[in-house]
Length: 303
Image 1 (cartoon, rainbow, N blue to C red):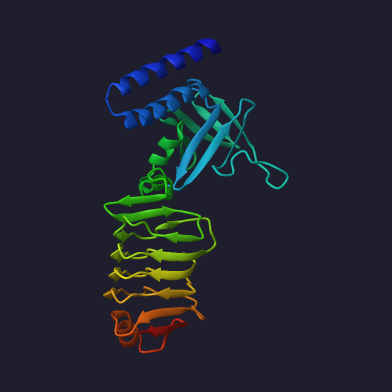
Image 2 (image 1 turned 30 degrees about the horizontal axis):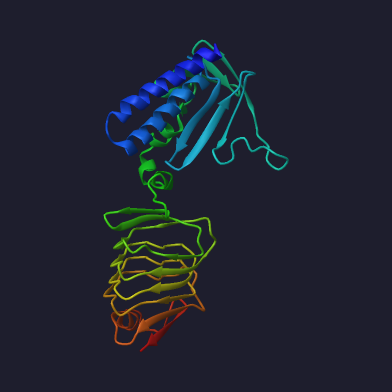
């Protein structure tokens, strides 16, 4: 039986590859072939009208849960990054379930179960609670509208440098480098652009090819030294809010600084903001703040 199933999968894989190759787009063909092969092979992990196996659930487009129902009447679920990682410090809590007809009892709660084209639909009898479990991970992610603006989605679009760039605008920068330079094919930086596991980025360089640093671009990203090079013209609202930088250098080419661009909720004492003498930035800090420091940061005028 296993041999028959295996041969069937291989045959389907061959048909998919032939069909997509005929389209003439090798790159698209490879991607689609891989996706279809994955789905064909995954189908054999679930028997028809059976709950046994792994299922996927997406919350808010970001958090992905994996559910597993075993043949011995136990189930559990956990975040994808923690699923199956039980050890002496992390205990998995398993619950009991039983099925009779289209009724399922999970940890003593009765619900109706329906097998659908996407996977499972479970609705508790005595409450409004419902659960949609998907057979395929990607289908679960795409079930949430928030997925399309999430890091999980953007990560599928990143280039070899970890960048997602649309029409010259850097949408996401996936990096764990301590010193980063915005690429030279970027003309604008979008909001909350940095995706990193680092606690702090030591140095950020924004070259002159970037004309606009967008609203909330580096908001809440801990930064060390920030070098904004000549050529940059606009710094958007809250662009560096709560980034608690050590020092930031603003060139004379900057003509617009929006509200709260450098705001620090808890004060950024000991930091320094360097501006050019006679520049818009110097005028901005003098005219709109009327003080020699900004949320604890010292303003240093350079010639």
